[in-house]
Image 1 (cartoon, rainbow, N blue to C red):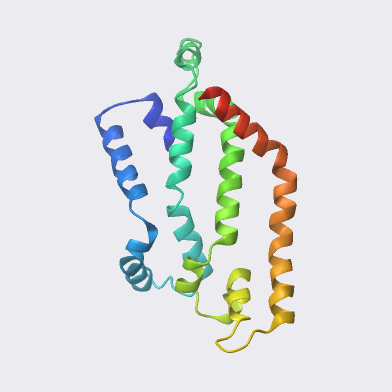
Image 2 (spheres, rainbow, N blue to C red):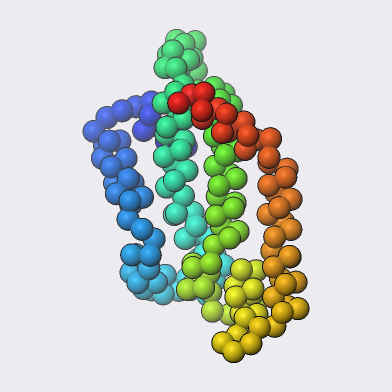
Length: 186
């Protein structure tokens, strides 16, 4: 929804917001780890799944730029015709723009799901309890400094791969549509 006013209402403030988000997108996550950890500690969000969820929500700037690029391909005539017909700004988004965003929305969901499922660094830094550890962290902890618990390591690896594999199989058609759609739209 944040990309909608940026694309369809270009003004100085929206250009500044886009530049600000672009600057945040260009700065690698690893360079902000220390201030981010201090911020999460100050708000008592370390070792909480809600803190990790909040962190992931803030890290979806990539989706913003995917949506912005895709929305720029939507003809303005559609929104102008809707305004002439008396549709509200919210109605234009929900009835016209959002249905047209289905391919990029599915692509964004796929990218975000795979990124969050496979993420190692953020859970390693922000989750300390064994009970809250993600599967990727459990796999990492199965390997010790001098030994490897191979049965646990291999079992957890298969358990971690099965859901993302099923997700990939179910979304395979949408992935291909997204790739072909991106190639055609240029």
